[in-house]
Length: 147
Image 1 (spheres, rainbow, N blue to C red):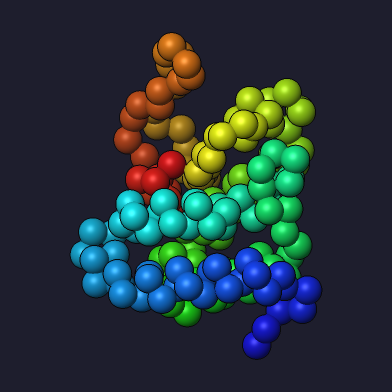
Image 2 (cartoon, rainbow, N blue to C red; image 1 turned 90 degrees about the horizontal axis):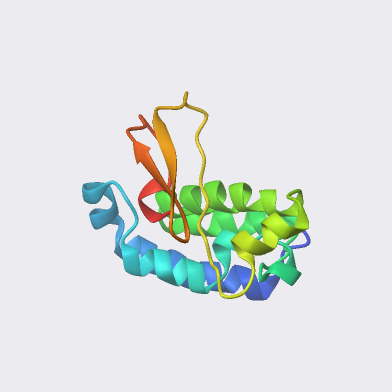
């Protein structure tokens, strides 16, 4: 099945990285996380920013592209599709943030991987020079090691 309206160039990026993820499946299972080089390749391909507006450096992709990218990655290695899905959906919040906030987080050369969880708060956020540090222990959160 192919989703209608999918951007073939973006889906091709996902297909190339699905093959890489497939080759890393044993390490992903053992380490319970995506390897850093794969994460950087996914970031370089823009796949964490599928739904970030183009003026903020994202791909501004449609739903068909998003679905096809996630499906393609998951066929290669399920965790790769899952982590891209979580990060792309969380990064989509850029569309609804105040413009100044979105530009601070996503503007310029920033390429953040934002993830979230619905678990109750279990940590603290403290200001440091240049941003914040989150400290604590959370029971679960897909993609947290890469955020």
